Image (cartoon, rainbow, N blue to C red; front, side, top):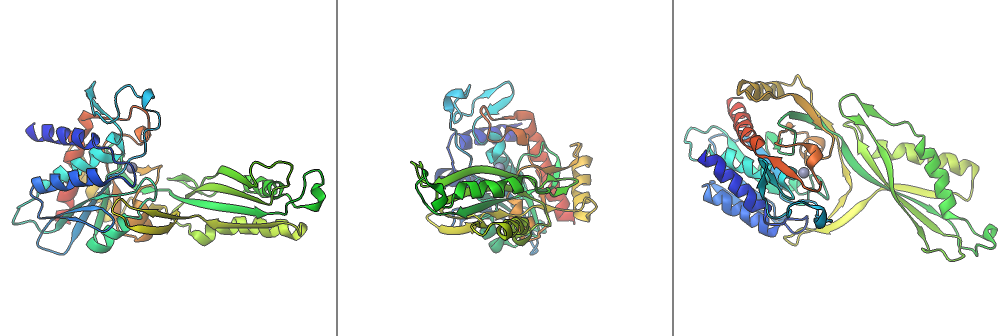
Length: 389
Ligand SMILES: [Zn+2]
């Protein structure tokens, strides 16, 4: 009981420190202090500002528990019934930004792993990491942790309603561009209208066949914005038009296979229209972490799915159910850091966390207190299974 009070108190304190992406520093410090207080063998801070806590075992094998420190912003605080950074407890729930996604889960992982500290017969290493900027670039900062730790199993603590997630769709951001030629719009024949050229392409993209996975769903392709130049267009035929597409990725898809159908459409239109100039590419972002590390990344975060029959999955599932946790196999519908560990590095990865995906990023985000204790037991069960395997 005392332990569970400590966990709840730590969750509240952690929620009370805002940690928007790029501004995780104070929350990262809190996490480090907590790990030190709980007597972790070693607590590090890497050049990206990820926090990494070690519990050392006798062999080289390592399980990595990964939770991200950052949260999405609160844009409309007046719509919240409770202050999103007060972490008030009402109706057996803790309310606040990051309660479900996923600062509570991270604290629970830190406590669950700590029960194995100073155990001289511990056979394998347990590492807990608080990663940064997941909400912007899934898995980009986790890549640095994986390079250092080389884990044998990764546990993503994102909300799974205490089910065992063994896959997710990935995500890519595509940039489409058409080029035209300026002219006075009273005499458009002298120019080439980049916006009408873009609509030609979009009409064809709209009827492209969507790929589908029986467990993960559709490889959705959704136009999310459109811009023309010059803007606003005062009596001028626009010379450029750009569109952003959000594309959800299935496990087998790669950059080439995602771009090909759109490149094929561009070629097809060009054949009949010699004024049609268009290109498509994966969007690239440049950013900086709270620790001052500047990085550049393509916005391509792969999907992944493991076989339910895989031994390690069956063993973890059995362990959870033997502990009375009523766990079922499931799949995330959002994108997680698993895009890196599983999607890019092919390291055995599972998702297991308290609360529901549907509460992430919402007004009045909360976590039910009874999920906290179960997640704590669940994480311990996962570690015990890993130690036995
Ligand atoms: Zn999350």
